[in-house]
Image (cartoon, rainbow over all chains, first blue to last red; front, side, top):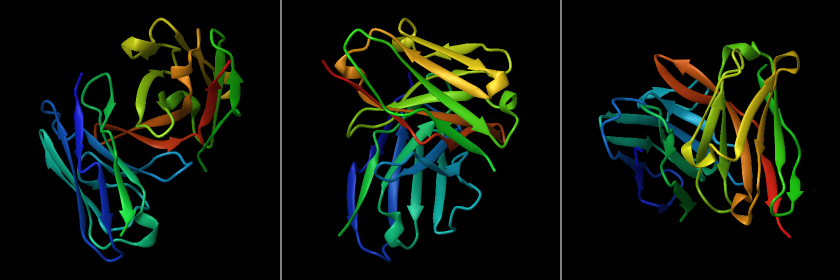
Length: 107
Length: 121
């Protein structure tokens, strides 16, 4: 199975900050990497697919980069509604696996 | 508009079974695989498997192959996930999600609201 490791596990930041979350795969997954945002009590919502493509309706402050084993999700200027947990997910091979999550909290 | 609506919360005793439903609307049900993902309290996301609504074929993550059955009723545009021989470790929110293939990449673009299954004696 492909292991997905996110860092950091948690992060405190302020409105307006630029934030970067990292996801590393245990083997190359090309660009088969998606990012999701999850708020408490809600289902995840897709932000980025194929490592760097912004999903429909997602604000431009979200961006993704990477290929192979190393990926990043960047929020250019944090807004109050961005405080949530973020997950990466690989779709390169079964079983589909998720990172353990990064909890983004208000400083 | 696309909607995915799951059945309501369940409380079960250890050893029992539970069936969660996932009703899709607003798109061609047969055209998109349905995946199931669960999330234990305070934990991350765990992928369980998928069903092809068109053929009925399913593929389960190895740890679920013995206890999980995925089925569908195309006339109702509904997918089902049944989990048998429940233990307290199965207490979780169970999600279904539509897999959309975009630029050769599969992405979960629509999710159900989640169904909390609580296993308690």
